[in-house]
Length: 102
Length: 224
Image (cartoon, rainbow over all chains, first blue to last red):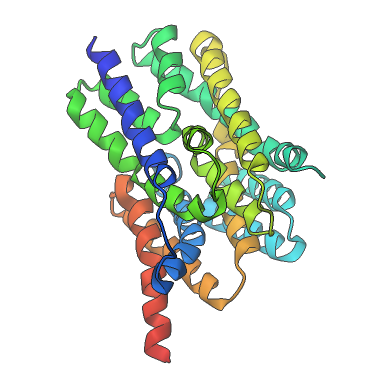
């Protein structure tokens, strides 16, 4: 019983966070600084997700493999402008770097 | 290429990752003492990867229910920012459709969706199709893991766990349009990484994501 109450409440908590800004409709134009902030927000959040995943992959601080692989993914993304190519390069790089003990 | 097709072509490596991590979740939940139905229901109802691992860990250690819900709320506070960030792209679609989009608003769907919008597209098909793909992948993986998970070993050896981080890196690099974007991105990476290393995992992404634009604008203002 406790389990189900916790799962349902956790589901509601998650959904509330995801739906609130989408459910409300603001009338009128937002001030310039709000628009500028919202414009910069997506890149900031995705970069934060990347930074968190690089620094502490899977609960343990990185031994350097993830930093190296992130730089490889960055380089390929800048060079090819291709998501899939950058991801595959990053995954191969991390596997290789971990295999040599980083 | 149609938006739905583009979502599948670009999204499949991420969806495969969802299946693999879903299998890991199913296995972990079973080992923590949950049944197959309870494990699958968690993925179905909560549908949030990191939070579900934290939940199972807290269940295992006997944490009180309010603490578990609070941890989930904090971990997912970042979605509040994400939803606010995609709100301008969502435009005037019906409330029902927006509430449906909210259910599949994961880190991955947000990242790929923004990548799509930033290329000038305004349709929501890409986001919806990829969101559905992730939902099926995660729930199928969870069920597989809950039933057969004991046979899957060591996904880290193949670097599979790094897929999503590589996706985030690539989307940032491709999505940066001018120097201000790049400054925001670098600040966010450093702040989030530092907070994670300092042990503030639950709030790392939300704090770094919310602060980085402010810091970057302040830096620019101080130069001007």
